[in-house]
Image (cartoon, rainbow, N blue to C red; front, top):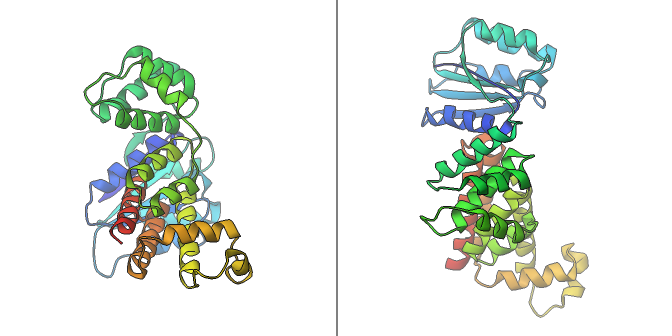
Length: 314
């Protein structure tokens, strides 16, 4: 199917380029590997011919971090590439891995530039484009206010744009006042805030806290971890009598009294079946955000919706 080389240090643009490449092959098997963390043979295994002949998309992130002893696994594959494989490689730039990069370029891959955006003017254009992606308009002054407040991190700018677009009146051009209100109401949100709203079945609040958490830099993995911890607490508490005081359960459950009390409150509305389904949904989402899904943030939002609605239905 081909080679795609993504070059540059802007991670949010690289992630979008990867998602775009994956979306062009619906139904393909997706494998994503971080070159700084893989072991010998992992790339060879991923690129090995498929027994079933299905289309595959193999994504190698952080190519510059690939150890020298593992680079031959790529160069050997490039000699006789598999027609059923779309190989997507992201190199952040710099001199590390340059020899391998030069070998790849000789094969004339499709090159996608994702250079770091550092100039304020370019950041302003990025913000404008983010609102355009949401079908919203924003004034020049409001764009500059966002850049001035959050301009050091494109992911943060993107998250702010997404939240503003979602929270302001539809059809209204977003202005400086809207940005000021957003900044005043912007509080740090943790994965545990998301987990609490989700397990309480408060779907709207769960989505709002999710957006706030992502906008303030909380890693999606920490959100699924908080959810997993909260669900484990529900499972532990569900098996004991409500007549037993929380202080008497500390030793056997390994939870603090306040955690037991909160879990008991949250258990209202849950059944063994809906709790089991929540565990299954969360396990799949955890795999999705660690590389199995084309759009991990969408997978996380879908997970929050599914679990919150499951509690409500229960």
